[in-house]
Amino acid sequence: MPRWQRYRRFGPILVLAGALMGAGCAAPGGGTGQAGVADSVPAAAVQLAADLADADAAVERTIGRIGEFAQRNRREAAAIAYATGGRVPPSGRAAAVAANGTAAMAAGDVLAPAFDALVLHGRRLAGLAGELPPGLPDPDPAQLRREAEQGLARYEAALRRRLPLTAAEREAGLAAVAALAVPPAEGADFADYVSERQPAVEALTVLLRAVIGADPQSGLRARLAAEREEAMRAQAALLAAARRDSSLGVLGRYALYHSAMRAEAELPPDAVLAAAVGMLSALPAAHAALASADPVAAAQRVAAFSAAVDRLEEAEWAPERAAAE
Image (cartoon, rainbow, N blue to C red; front, side, top):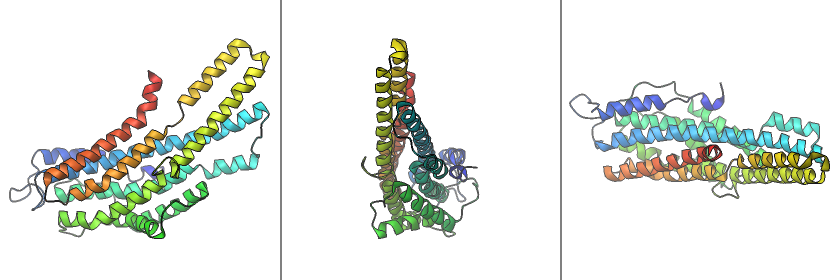
């Protein structure tokens, strides 16, 4: 089973939890959820948990598509170079690329355990706020941290540079993976638990924003931009060679041009990674608001995070919708 799918599938559980809470979810004694938790906070906690699961799935799909594009792009660039008389990478280098994967796949090795921890934490928030059915077995916090740390080393090796993080930010982000996977103490207070985990949520979002790229010139966004430019240069070289080849004829060049335009339209856009960064930016405020004494503010901050997740999903599917039109 792929690493990204090992601790997934919390969505149906969270939907059921939301239905239970919406129906009242009466706790012993006639109350709703944990004593001291405002009535609207359980719904906000369940919404945040469900949004984290949705964001996790969207990021997983996005990273998978970018990784597939990068591998396909390298093969296509080598084929075009061969066809046009350009420089073809040595076969040994091509084999190394196939064996080592891409920067996107290495980024996924960081994002996977990090989102495992976030989704698990969201589920526990929902559990503390009210009734929640049993879920999947919990991963080991120390193991998740090791996986994130090893993935970060592979990712930076693939980028051939270190991420723009201080040593303290790096350590805090990795420690946050383990911290968010540690279950709350028995009888933990909801607001206290949220406040205790808030620094870990903030530290992890700093790390993940750096992995994805806080701007188009950093992280995976910079690598994607370079891959897109490489793909467009290769297609331009192929079209130029086709124009010089009179044996293709008008119809042959016409077909090749349309093929190149389709390939360009299918290039993964930066917009989806930018939306992922926006989603991460909205998470700390939504999480912190759950501990506030103002349930309206909590609902608003969580709604803002939900909207950010919606924008991520819209950006994810935008290229396919555009191609279908």
